[in-house]
Image 1 (cartoon, rainbow, N blue to C red):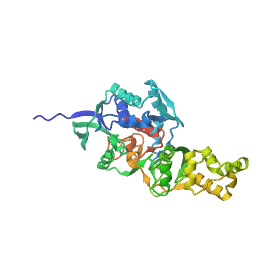
Image 2 (spheres, one colour; image 1 turned 60 degrees about the vertical axis):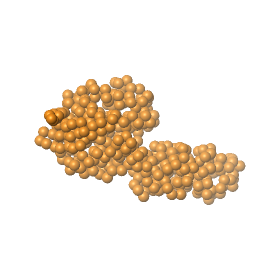
Image 3 (tube, rainbow, N blue to C red; image 1 turned 135 degrees about the vertical axis):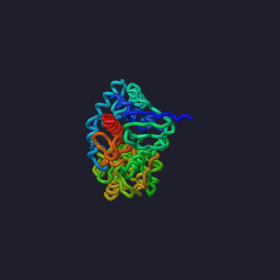
Image 4 (cartoon, rainbow, N blue to C red; image 1 turned 90 degrees about the horizontal axis):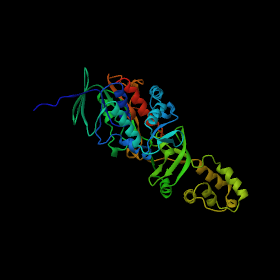
Length: 398
């Protein structure tokens, strides 16, 4: 029996997600023979489900301060060299209609598949080979590069790019494989945990969350010196919505979260004015006018505050209500974990990578890009921009 001949590539990229496809297209455009392999049966699954199916592909206001990393300076080089404007130019060139939802967040007008199809077209034009349903069995380094043994045969390449993402949403086939590759070649992996993820509540606040499940409201939320202003959603399991997802990346087990349910409104002053102008109005009716009937009813009950006319509402009750609304303090039991997390915090230690090229400082020719690296963006297109920027940095050098 004749053994199958090894296949050759200048650069082999593990992972057919946002970072992997973009890196391949950019490397191919430089004339490099680029190959992408992925164990999944379809490329870009996470792209397709992102942004509620419309893909929040970047943000007008990209800045390093919107990223978490043990080394906050690491992301600066790549982000400054391949910017949001560069990616927007590509989107416009492909005539993909898009819009700004809020605060610079850019979404496709139609479907997330517009972005995936754009990446696949760019790969096609650049002569990239994409092999799906292909799992890596072993990776070895030799003098000329790497030998990658897969379920579909053996590949040899000069440069190897790990673009495997992280563990979030395992139903899409996500794993921590990239961390294993890093550790195999002597890299340290910083502790990994779920980020941009809903909180679970199991204490006395649990009943309130369940009774208000489905209700959303704008809030200010704080934890560990960080704060966000956005919408919050009550769920049967706890709290979700953009504000909660944002602060979850700064929360650690055991931490307390403080929520202002009435940002921009001084409850004490407003209630005082209303008491003078509309003394016969009931407290529940007044609160419902600022929120909803459902919220007013369940909130007053949870705080043990009896409903009555504003004229009958004492200063003590006013103070208690104001404090509860402006500084609702709770201690989440945990998060919903990787099942619903949008990203993974932590990852391959950036101290061991070149910020200009994403190349390993330990193993020449080995690169790490995208979510597998210890760089995590805020909600709102920041993680996609990191995928594009880190991929472009590697593509210039592979």
